[in-house]
Image (cartoon, rainbow, N blue to C red; front, side, top):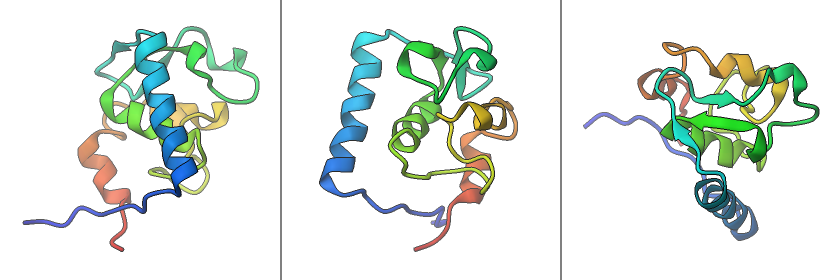
Amino acid sequence: MNYYGSYYVPNTTGYNAIGNLANTLWSNYHLTYVFNRQLSLKWPVSYVVDRIEPVDILSIRCDGLVEYCYERNDVRLLGTNSAWNISDPAHYTAHTNLLGHTPAAQRAYMTQS
């Protein structure tokens, strides 16, 4: 079996915040699934001020949901040093490439612990 990587589990407070955000997105925002990008916004990213909030999201892919919940709580999952946070408007375009951010491609960003 191939080893694809692992991540640490945040402290209890961080872990609860991540879970609560995922539940909020699912329960309150009724997001639709999108195939061709991790995250689609309701309006141009230039309209977002400080960070991408749940109200800004139109649709999301399953891996985008996980990455958004972690990275919005400052737990880095994927991406380069200059564009890792999917909830940061400045990093948004790095997460909209169909081929660059597939689960298979993301595996290369993981590090063995």
